[in-house]
Image (tube, rainbow, N blue to C red; front, side):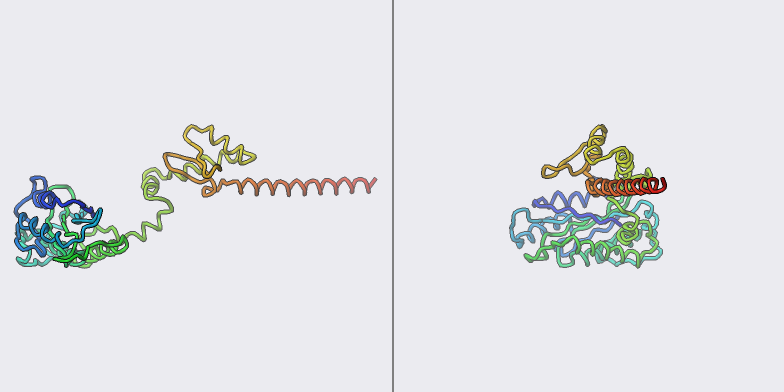
Amino acid sequence: MIVKTVRWKNKNFKKLIDYINEDKGRASDDVFTIFHNVKNPTAQGAVKSFRENDKFRIKRKNGVVVYHEVLSFSEKDTNQILNNSNSNLLGNKYNSNSNLLAKLEKIAFQYIQIRGKNALCFAKPHLSDKNIHIHFAFSGTEYRSKKTLRMSNQKFLEVRKGIEKFQMEKFPEIKNSIVYHKEKKVKKQKSCSDKEFQLKRRTGETDKEKLKSILSQVFSLSKSFEEFVGKVQEKKEFEIYTYRGKINGVIFKVRKYRFKTLGFGQEKFLKIHQVEQELTKIRKSRSRGKGLERSLTK
């Protein structure tokens, strides 16, 4: 599954909770709703509880008031998610009205446990879009506490992997929504940025590879770095950029690429020049040797 988070820095609890509860007017009454650490299990009760709990938060500039998080599943798994044959209900603990959504309810409850069990949470699934997803509103601090729910990116990645691991273990049939446990395999395939990887998958060639191919042709026709830069400037699709007054690389499709990183830095031309000088010395040495040999034979 994909886990997204948005940090709200205003106190419009009603707007967020109404959105989660109503799903733009498409929400069904026959779905579960979670009221975690909320006294009155209604949407209005949740808004009131969030407001009261926010009084314990230490007010800071750009402080997070509420976390809006979403667990989203692949549309290919919709039938498996709604097939309840291998799942057990949580009973009436979270006001579940539909046996079909027991898997989602169990995943949602587990997510609350590993993400913010000591905080307030209002959660509800949305079923109207192609991909089923669950919305969560977590309070910015724990219940009646000033302790925040803030997490580092690394810690939040662990939460994502944790809920996905739970899904894989409890509901292996939901197999098309695996994201975070495929990262290592994907990274082995990627030797470039994510955008480049997606481009390569579609066309078989990344922007960087295309650029290197063009520059290789220019390089083969250039005798010096200056000549190489001049020929690159003649190309309409490129733009030379400098760094601290020195030519550093080329701009191609809005992105900057360093000549040195691409393998076309000044050092390369210097090495070629040195090799040519050595070859010239060898040729001259051989030529002198042959001349001496002819004079001795006369």
